Image (cartoon, rainbow, N blue to C red; front, side, top):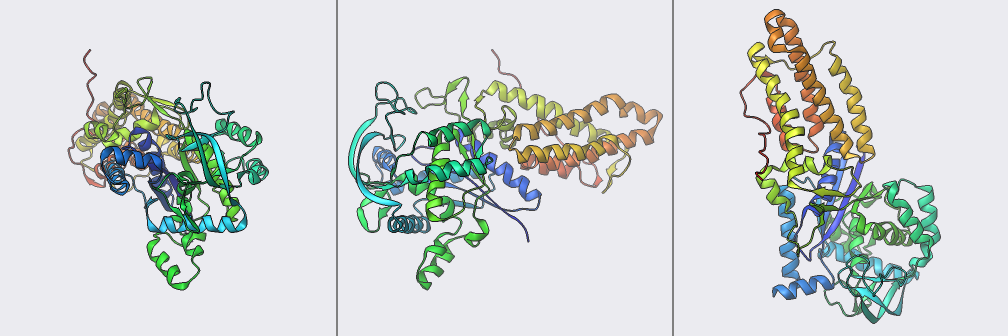
Length: 503
């Protein structure tokens, strides 16, 4: 039986259009999904959009449209960008989907009956942008939000609470017994210390936000956007089929849900998130799953943020990087590769066009592209065609097995930069072989030796093309086409060099 591999991105909040930060998370999961498919896994790759809450009401009103019109438009922009960036997702969930809303409401009522949710009232400091209450210990001097550095609002309202405090000890026990759950390790202590400092029950409904999923037993309340959003990981996986009580509803749910049976997919193998939402996914979400008696995801990985030329991305600075524009000018695959070569995955990174062009020229044009061109040009002159299989006592071909092992290990650690480092390093070794053996000279004195060098290069390049496919699917396909058995054709450069910007 083929092993299932279920991975997710966050569902992206549709108060604005997608940018390079959203692309980063999604491409990371796409790289992993493509690699796992190569290894024979039955991958289920989920992404989507988070579409409820006060911020959506506000954005829609400012644009003069209804919240549904707004969310339809922005969700479409995400889908369009994922198509542009060659994202091979299997399912795209929207929190306005009926199949999702049904599951959220069923879970809410289930937890209400179990006593994990109860009615009360709340007074506290609230950030509209975060859609989150903050404790006094978290608030910055001057009553500012710790994330947005803006004044918090004083909010008083009747609300339902989730008994988050009940799960303080179970969470700490789980972290201790499953150290891989909080990843990377550099972010684990922040979560552990937060839980150890004491958990307060969480407000999970609003009476002043109309754009949300109503509580079935008390429709004056809509369900808190984060509580609603986190449930997408199990609503998309088919949990709704387990919550339906009558046969007709069960069959209707089965038709709506694209996944296999819930038990086949859950628990998720990996939730990939940005570091700013790590706490939601490693405290609130596992506590909700514990309350439901469901297994927890195997790993939650929080990556870092991107700055632009040393500055935080913001509309006011006008420095938000549109990945579609970069891809249109320089190619989708070079952009995909750059994002994971520049910084170790998990740490913060800085995006600059100068760095992008330098990486493009050194890693792609001078290394991979140059290697492919010179190999095929020399092979065309000296052999005319490539054989289907290439065997022999070749040193670098033998070394490729060790390189592949290192690549597999790096993927297991989600060290995408190390994957590329191994691939580019191997390509550099192949270029060194060309420089040392000089097959263009060797062909005059020992044609068979020259042929052996070219065959080794071609065999190794076929492996490089396979390794590159998760990062650069279109480029890898083109490389594989050029290295097919048979007559060698003449091709343009795979990566034309980029000229530096004039000062």
